Image 1 (cartoon, helix red, strand yellow):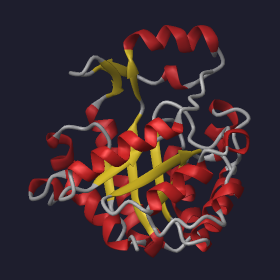
Image 2: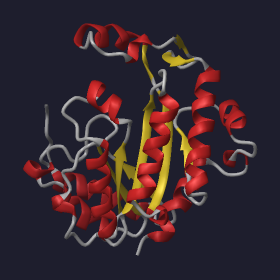
Image 3: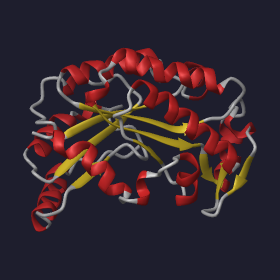
Image 4: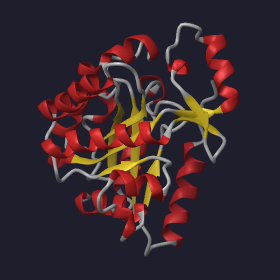
Amino acid sequence: MRVYVNLEDLFNEVETFLATHPQQVFRIGTGELTDSLTLDHITQYSRQLVPFFAHQTNAILELKTKTTNIDNLLDLPHRGRTMVSWSLNPNRLIETEEKKAPALEERLAAARKCQEAGYLLGFHFDPLIYYDGWESDYHDVVEQIFDMVNPDGIGWISLGALRYPAHVDEIIRRRHPESCIVLGELIPGKDGKLRYFRPIREEMFRQMISWIHALAPQVTVYLCMESPEVWQKVYPDPPIASCPLSKILDRAVFPRAR
């Protein structure tokens, strides 16, 4: 594992870039390739990142995690310009596919602490995994979210069905022979990634959106790496038909910054 320590260079580059685009707003995501907070008790990066973004007028930072490693965040002056997001799955999958990661209840308890500290929250169901009983398990997760946190403090919830480059299939089977995720019926998509059949993805998205909006109709829900055709099938009146997704997400978070 490689950890970069030249944060001063990073801050200088980001500050210069933001200053040269004062009329634009930027959502700066982390945690796509690794967990944003796993090593934070060692690196203490959040104690520099959060105050830095608190002073930027046209950017919001998103920290994505599966951990409960939030202690550094709770007393920081964030001014609503850092969003803390959790990747979620049912406990059945956490126990078998996310070994050593905190249980669902622990993640949601950490999210509630961050919300109480004034942070905007995000939740990511990515990957959604299809299996016998997925409906009941994922429905329970949605209900637990809104039992634990105030939906008015959620910036967005993303939905992304399981997908990965074809060559990764062999790596998963070799390194994790006990994993069930490769047992689903996956086919190559137009982007070369293995995916569930489109009707399966659409079914999962429709169900998830209906469960979320039944409890919190105001929460922004978006699809990850799906075509306009899938959006059209999932939403009767797809929001991206009248507004680019980037603008939808901007509107979900920037008005709440202080």
